[in-house]
Image (cartoon, rainbow, N blue to C red):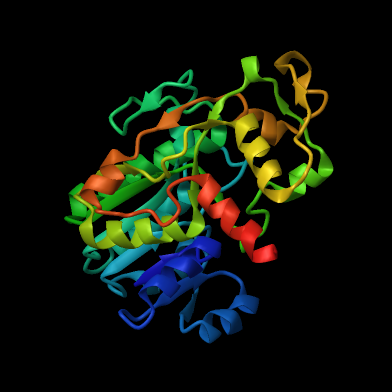
Length: 295
């Protein structure tokens, strides 16, 4: 198995299949090679922004996990994910893998006004980063059809986990960062990092060709209610509520962008087709596990 983008979730994927497959991870950082080897993963030097360094990926693995983010701002074709294009070209130089899983974002749906969203909904990405993800999805589906690869796409919402850097609302609650008042609030979606890793593994072996899956838990909460729940579990004050009209004065632009889109992801396909049984079906389960561990 080749893992491209072997960060927190990639390492969890590796842990989930440890001992079952040989693990290889692409890395552009020499300093990470020691850590990867300690985890039983063979590091392979390469950079998705430098196509000439990727030739050794061809024919290397029968299963590929692609979790690397698209390039940031600054490229001329800002809507393209050149990293995914470079990876897929390299994989086609020799025999293609049997299956590939790409970690996309639920942001490709854009604002849905709080609607329940299934995978068949037309994409309307509003932000540059979501447009690059949509471009990557198109490239992955084309690669799957052209190369005869079972390519699965996971549309991932907010990832949380107590043992993930910045993986819970605790820090924001300590800072007293505001949330929107109830009448302005938006629905937000979540997945525990361990459940996401298990979804990736399930898709590698059970995903249908060129199939897309919403990779979220069963939670249906607005963002403010999510932080209120976390505050209750942690024994911390609830965050202040502000109207949308003044939110730009109190919140960073990145956070405001998340607060401009509202949707409720439908995960029936994830559970029915991939037969994934969530260990943390509600954010309460994952956050409560952290709270109990601290007692």
